[in-house]
Image (cartoon, rainbow, N blue to C red; front, side, top):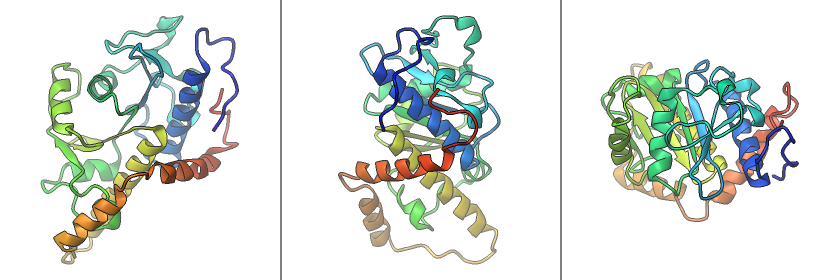
Length: 257
Protein backbone atom coordinates (compact mmCIF):
# COMPACT_ATOMS: atom_id res chain seq x y z
CA UNK A 1 0.00 0.00 0.00
CA UNK A 2 1.22 3.51 -0.84
CA UNK A 3 0.94 6.18 1.85
CA UNK A 4 1.05 9.96 1.67
CA UNK A 5 4.24 11.79 2.60
CA UNK A 6 4.98 12.16 6.34
CA UNK A 7 3.70 15.29 8.09
CA UNK A 8 6.08 18.23 8.35
CA UNK A 9 6.03 17.93 12.15
CA UNK A 10 8.11 14.75 11.91
CA UNK A 11 11.49 16.14 10.93
CA UNK A 12 13.86 13.82 9.11
CA UNK A 13 11.37 11.01 8.52
CA UNK A 14 11.81 9.58 5.04
CA UNK A 15 8.94 8.28 2.94
CA UNK A 16 10.27 4.74 3.46
CA UNK A 17 10.22 5.15 7.24
CA UNK A 18 6.77 6.72 7.09
CA UNK A 19 5.44 3.69 5.21
CA UNK A 20 6.81 1.39 7.92
CA UNK A 21 5.31 3.64 10.61
CA UNK A 22 1.88 3.46 8.94
CA UNK A 23 2.01 -0.31 8.59
CA UNK A 24 3.21 -0.81 12.16
CA UNK A 25 0.47 1.48 13.50
CA UNK A 26 -2.03 -0.59 11.50
CA UNK A 27 -0.61 -3.76 13.04
CA UNK A 28 -1.15 -2.34 16.53
CA UNK A 29 -4.77 -1.65 15.67
CA UNK A 30 -5.25 -5.13 14.19
CA UNK A 31 -3.81 -6.70 17.33
CA UNK A 32 -6.41 -4.68 19.26
CA UNK A 33 -9.15 -5.69 16.81
CA UNK A 34 -8.42 -9.38 17.39
CA UNK A 35 -8.24 -8.85 21.18
CA UNK A 36 -4.58 -9.76 21.57
CA UNK A 37 -3.67 -6.78 23.75
CA UNK A 38 -2.64 -6.61 27.40
CA UNK A 39 -3.49 -2.97 28.16
CA UNK A 40 -0.19 -1.12 27.47
CA UNK A 41 2.17 -3.95 28.42
CA UNK A 42 3.14 -5.69 25.21
CA UNK A 43 4.96 -4.39 22.17
CA UNK A 44 5.28 -4.59 18.40
CA UNK A 45 8.39 -3.25 16.70
CA UNK A 46 9.74 -2.80 13.19
CA UNK A 47 13.12 -2.05 11.72
CA UNK A 48 13.55 1.37 10.12
CA UNK A 49 14.89 1.15 6.55
CA UNK A 50 18.51 2.24 6.28
CA UNK A 51 21.96 1.48 7.68
CA UNK A 52 21.55 2.98 11.17
CA UNK A 53 20.00 -0.06 12.95
CA UNK A 54 17.10 1.95 14.33
CA UNK A 55 13.69 0.51 14.99
CA UNK A 56 10.20 1.71 15.91
CA UNK A 57 8.31 0.74 19.05
CA UNK A 58 5.18 2.04 20.75
CA UNK A 59 5.15 5.15 22.86
CA UNK A 60 4.52 3.79 26.35
CA UNK A 61 1.00 4.59 27.46
CA UNK A 62 -0.73 4.74 24.06
CA UNK A 63 -3.42 2.07 23.76
CA UNK A 64 -3.13 -0.22 20.76
CA UNK A 65 -6.53 0.65 19.31
CA UNK A 66 -5.59 4.36 19.19
CA UNK A 67 -2.03 3.97 17.83
CA UNK A 68 -1.00 6.35 15.03
CA UNK A 69 2.12 6.40 12.88
CA UNK A 70 3.30 9.56 14.63
CA UNK A 71 2.96 7.89 18.07
CA UNK A 72 5.70 5.38 17.32
CA UNK A 73 9.12 6.06 18.81
CA UNK A 74 12.39 5.58 16.94
CA UNK A 75 15.12 4.10 19.14
CA UNK A 76 18.56 2.60 18.62
CA UNK A 77 19.79 -0.81 19.77
CA UNK A 78 20.81 0.70 23.12
CA UNK A 79 17.32 2.02 23.85
CA UNK A 80 18.14 5.65 23.14
CA UNK A 81 15.33 7.71 21.61
CA UNK A 82 16.40 9.04 18.18
CA UNK A 83 13.88 11.86 17.84
CA UNK A 84 13.27 15.43 18.85
CA UNK A 85 11.66 15.89 22.22
CA UNK A 86 12.70 12.57 23.84
CA UNK A 87 11.22 13.70 27.16
CA UNK A 88 7.76 13.00 25.73
CA UNK A 89 8.72 9.71 24.12
CA UNK A 90 8.66 6.99 26.78
CA UNK A 91 9.42 3.37 25.92
CA UNK A 92 9.16 0.27 28.08
CA UNK A 93 12.51 -1.20 29.21
CA UNK A 94 11.35 -4.82 29.10
CA UNK A 95 9.95 -4.32 25.62
CA UNK A 96 13.28 -2.88 24.52
CA UNK A 97 15.18 -5.89 25.88
CA UNK A 98 13.14 -8.52 24.07
CA UNK A 99 12.75 -6.68 20.78
CA UNK A 100 16.30 -5.39 20.55
CA UNK A 101 17.59 -8.94 21.00
CA UNK A 102 15.83 -10.06 17.82
CA UNK A 103 16.64 -6.93 15.83
CA UNK A 104 20.33 -7.15 16.76
CA UNK A 105 20.73 -10.81 15.84
CA UNK A 106 18.30 -11.40 12.95
CA UNK A 107 18.68 -8.84 10.20
CA UNK A 108 16.39 -10.99 8.05
CA UNK A 109 13.48 -10.15 10.36
CA UNK A 110 12.11 -6.61 10.30
CA UNK A 111 9.04 -6.92 12.54
CA UNK A 112 8.70 -8.46 16.02
CA UNK A 113 5.40 -9.11 17.85
CA UNK A 114 5.12 -10.09 21.52
CA UNK A 115 1.76 -10.80 23.20
CA UNK A 116 0.35 -11.74 26.61
CA UNK A 117 -3.00 -13.27 25.64
CA UNK A 118 -4.91 -15.61 27.94
CA UNK A 119 -4.56 -18.51 25.49
CA UNK A 120 -0.91 -17.77 24.76
CA UNK A 121 -0.01 -17.56 28.45
CA UNK A 122 -1.98 -20.76 29.15
CA UNK A 123 -0.09 -22.77 26.54
CA UNK A 124 3.17 -21.15 27.70
CA UNK A 125 2.43 -22.66 31.13
CA UNK A 126 1.84 -26.18 29.77
CA UNK A 127 4.84 -28.51 29.91
CA UNK A 128 4.16 -30.09 26.51
CA UNK A 129 3.98 -26.71 24.75
CA UNK A 130 1.98 -26.35 21.54
CA UNK A 131 0.37 -29.66 20.62
CA UNK A 132 -0.02 -30.70 16.95
CA UNK A 133 -3.80 -31.00 17.26
CA UNK A 134 -5.02 -28.39 14.79
CA UNK A 135 -4.19 -27.25 11.28
CA UNK A 136 -3.18 -23.89 12.71
CA UNK A 137 -0.74 -25.56 15.12
CA UNK A 138 0.80 -27.62 12.32
CA UNK A 139 2.00 -24.43 10.66
CA UNK A 140 4.56 -24.33 13.49
CA UNK A 141 5.40 -28.04 13.66
CA UNK A 142 9.19 -28.21 13.66
CA UNK A 143 9.28 -24.41 13.32
CA UNK A 144 8.64 -23.30 16.90
CA UNK A 145 11.20 -22.41 19.58
CA UNK A 146 10.87 -22.22 23.37
CA UNK A 147 12.57 -19.94 25.90
CA UNK A 148 12.50 -20.51 29.66
CA UNK A 149 11.18 -17.87 32.01
CA UNK A 150 13.80 -15.69 33.72
CA UNK A 151 11.61 -13.00 35.28
CA UNK A 152 10.62 -9.61 33.84
CA UNK A 153 12.90 -9.02 30.86
CA UNK A 154 15.04 -6.21 32.30
CA UNK A 155 18.37 -8.06 32.22
CA UNK A 156 20.24 -7.34 28.98
CA UNK A 157 22.18 -10.58 29.45
CA UNK A 158 18.98 -12.47 28.64
CA UNK A 159 19.13 -11.24 25.04
CA UNK A 160 21.81 -13.77 24.08
CA UNK A 161 19.90 -16.68 25.58
CA UNK A 162 16.65 -15.57 23.94
CA UNK A 163 18.31 -15.34 20.51
CA UNK A 164 20.05 -18.68 20.96
CA UNK A 165 16.73 -20.32 21.80
CA UNK A 166 15.01 -18.73 18.82
CA UNK A 167 17.67 -20.09 16.46
CA UNK A 168 16.52 -19.91 12.85
CA UNK A 169 12.82 -19.93 13.70
CA UNK A 170 10.31 -17.08 13.41
CA UNK A 171 8.04 -18.07 16.30
CA UNK A 172 8.68 -18.84 19.94
CA UNK A 173 6.75 -19.56 23.11
CA UNK A 174 8.15 -17.73 26.14
CA UNK A 175 7.49 -20.14 29.02
CA UNK A 176 5.17 -18.77 31.72
CA UNK A 177 5.03 -15.52 29.76
CA UNK A 178 3.50 -15.38 26.28
CA UNK A 179 4.08 -15.55 22.54
CA UNK A 180 6.76 -14.06 20.30
CA UNK A 181 6.84 -14.01 16.51
CA UNK A 182 8.87 -12.17 13.91
CA UNK A 183 8.53 -11.65 10.19
CA UNK A 184 10.54 -10.56 7.20
CA UNK A 185 7.66 -8.15 6.63
CA UNK A 186 4.88 -6.72 8.75
CA UNK A 187 2.23 -8.76 6.86
CA UNK A 188 4.20 -11.94 7.60
CA UNK A 189 4.48 -11.10 11.30
CA UNK A 190 0.72 -10.49 11.41
CA UNK A 191 0.08 -13.87 9.79
CA UNK A 192 2.34 -15.65 12.29
CA UNK A 193 0.81 -14.12 15.41
CA UNK A 194 -2.72 -14.67 14.10
CA UNK A 195 -2.08 -18.37 13.45
CA UNK A 196 -0.13 -18.96 16.68
CA UNK A 197 -2.78 -17.26 18.79
CA UNK A 198 -5.58 -19.23 17.14
CA UNK A 199 -3.62 -22.47 17.62
CA UNK A 200 -3.28 -21.69 21.33
CA UNK A 201 -6.99 -20.86 21.61
CA UNK A 202 -7.86 -24.18 19.97
CA UNK A 203 -5.57 -26.09 22.33
CA UNK A 204 -7.00 -24.49 25.45
CA UNK A 205 -10.54 -25.23 24.23
CA UNK A 206 -9.69 -28.84 23.31
CA UNK A 207 -8.10 -29.54 26.69
CA UNK A 208 -11.24 -28.40 28.51
CA UNK A 209 -13.34 -31.07 26.77
CA UNK A 210 -12.06 -33.95 28.86
CA UNK A 211 -11.81 -36.23 25.83
CA UNK A 212 -8.80 -38.01 24.37
CA UNK A 213 -7.15 -35.81 21.73
CA UNK A 214 -6.60 -36.92 18.14
CA UNK A 215 -3.05 -36.31 16.90
CA UNK A 216 -2.26 -36.64 13.17
CA UNK A 217 0.47 -39.12 12.25
CA UNK A 218 4.02 -37.81 11.99
CA UNK A 219 4.01 -37.96 8.20
CA UNK A 220 0.93 -35.72 8.04
CA UNK A 221 2.39 -33.28 10.54
CA UNK A 222 5.55 -32.89 8.47
CA UNK A 223 3.59 -32.62 5.21
CA UNK A 224 1.30 -29.90 6.58
CA UNK A 225 4.19 -27.89 8.03
CA UNK A 226 5.94 -28.08 4.66
CA UNK A 227 2.78 -26.92 2.90
CA UNK A 228 2.51 -23.92 5.22
CA UNK A 229 6.18 -23.02 4.89
CA UNK A 230 6.55 -23.47 1.14
CA UNK A 231 8.54 -20.91 -0.87
CA UNK A 232 6.89 -17.82 -2.32
CA UNK A 233 4.20 -17.64 0.34
CA UNK A 234 4.70 -13.91 0.93
CA UNK A 235 2.02 -13.07 -1.64
CA UNK A 236 -0.56 -14.79 0.58
CA UNK A 237 0.56 -12.73 3.56
CA UNK A 238 0.07 -9.54 1.57
CA UNK A 239 -3.39 -10.54 0.34
CA UNK A 240 -4.48 -11.32 3.91
CA UNK A 241 -2.92 -8.06 5.15
CA UNK A 242 -4.72 -5.93 2.58
CA UNK A 243 -8.00 -7.58 3.56
CA UNK A 244 -7.32 -7.08 7.27
CA UNK A 245 -6.74 -3.36 6.80
CA UNK A 246 -10.39 -3.01 5.82
CA UNK A 247 -11.31 -4.18 9.33
CA UNK A 248 -9.79 -1.06 10.90
CA UNK A 249 -10.65 1.49 8.23
CA UNK A 250 -12.73 4.34 9.62
CA UNK A 251 -12.33 3.35 13.28
CA UNK A 252 -11.50 6.52 15.17
CA UNK A 253 -8.57 8.70 14.15
CA UNK A 254 -6.63 7.53 11.11
CA UNK A 255 -3.65 5.31 11.93
CA UNK A 256 -1.87 6.97 8.98
CA UNK A 257 -1.39 10.23 10.87
